[in-house]
Image 1 (cartoon, rainbow, N blue to C red):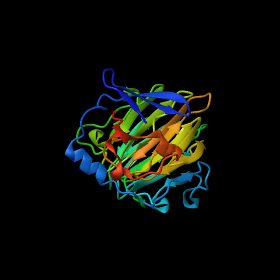
Image 2 (cartoon, rainbow, N blue to C red):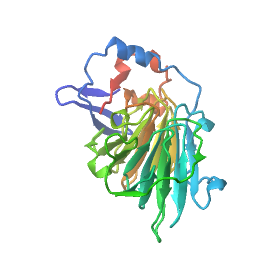
Image 3 (tube, one colour):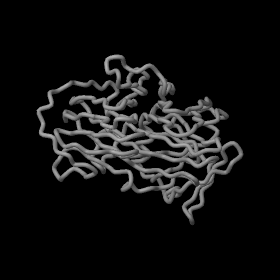
Amino acid sequence: MPSYNQTIGRCKQSIDGVMVEWYDNDAMAPRSPENERSLASTAEVAVEEFIASGHSAPLAEFMPIELRIMVSAGCRAKGIATGTATFPPGAILPYHVHECGEAITILDGQADISVMGRRYQLSRLDCIYVPEGTAHSVANFDTASLLIAHSAFSNSSPGRILVPDLFHDENRGAGLPNAGEPERLRRFGQAEMYPLAEGTRFYDLFASRFGSVGMCGGYGEFDPGTALPCHIHKFDESITIITGQSVCRVQGKQHTLSNCDTAFVPEGKPHCFLNQSGSPMAMIWVYAGNEPERTLVSAEYCLGLQAWPGAHRLEGTDRGQLDI
């Protein structure tokens, strides 16, 4: 069971015999009736976790751009889809629109992303959010290096409609959108870091407070030997391991992920991610909700040592808040 220290706002939980600490200033605060009702609405579901390989076969129709779908309605996700795209030198995904919002995060290389003619240069971990129905294109103008990007959609079955390029090209470079323009661009160098546990660093890249709708996500780093405690969410989640190797535990089952392998964790399922290696580990996480939210539960649920009763049946002592 987690232990809490209200004075300094830290919590502790043993994971594999290692005492993990995380920061939680509200851990001992009384839960409101509204929060209780919200947690009670997280019903037990039959949907299972799903692990997608980072080296799965790409969609043939977009070659030589390698588009890989990781999480979607195909694994029974609700409200989100995620995937990766690898662009060879000189490759362009032409102007298109989606019926939902899209957040594009650069994993490696340099991207030129145009939104209705406004062309931005994005570097590693920069993130642009494009609202539904907004025409945009993605290009790798580098003549020697690959571009690798992660995409998140606020729909579990996103479509793509190609549209003509009728826009005047305006090079915005490393700038930001102007007021009133629909796209939102978050430069990683301007993102605020916060720790969720000792030896971790998290950065929110898109959320409702930044202009995205129906989903949120960000980047997390784990030092060797660190972990987040066992927890659940009110939303489905996609987690892509982009650096190093991670162990993912979901309600008694264990998976090892690396090289853009992606875990789909349904809402209300106890899970945690651990870096048991001797090197740093990093992830891109996406929730099917407007803002990040995490609820702590006993480590025994992640280890499978205790039967999971469902979020709506948890006793208060089995639950704590892991807030940003």
